[in-house]
Length: 117
Length: 111
Image (cartoon, each protein chain N blue to C red):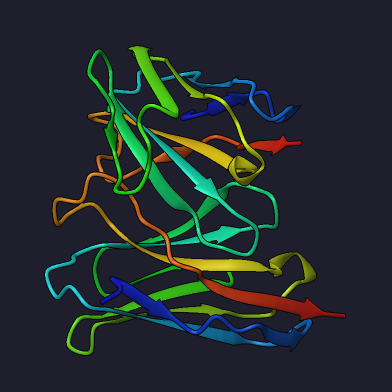
């Protein structure tokens, strides 16, 4: 149980285009979802936290207008990188948590590798 | 000040060796921690939880020393597949809304 999927697993896009990444909790309802990114040889950095039906809370330094997060249902959150630039190339990982199932646990998706050319 | 501090390594050990990592933490109110492992270009995977004094799972033993504010991870009989980055992560018991990760400790087990 507690499986989180992400789609796509990798994507290459041209500078200036937008890319949408989906994160799904397959066997549980995710009341809270998190988006992280990781640049090469760096640590995983939290970008934003979203609760179902609410606006996402962004970490300091993360542009909310550039990284659009939608958490419209208890099993799906999307991250859209708008007007992508090469510096947005990174490994994006979502994570999900639910109440009542190991309160302190977060379940991670397999990640999406974004390359902007 | 960082929440946790780990020796970045790399730790290069031969197969079969015993290796220990330490992690010091700054928030004395933290009650729980996790050890995650992360392989290159993969998501972090939960290895062990540490809620009290310690936890053991096969070749892996984690210990929590509240007086000195450090957590350790001991790996016995290292395998090549243990090569990864090991991350010490504070739990969510002090009101954090999400797990936060440091740089971890890189382990390379050599044949």
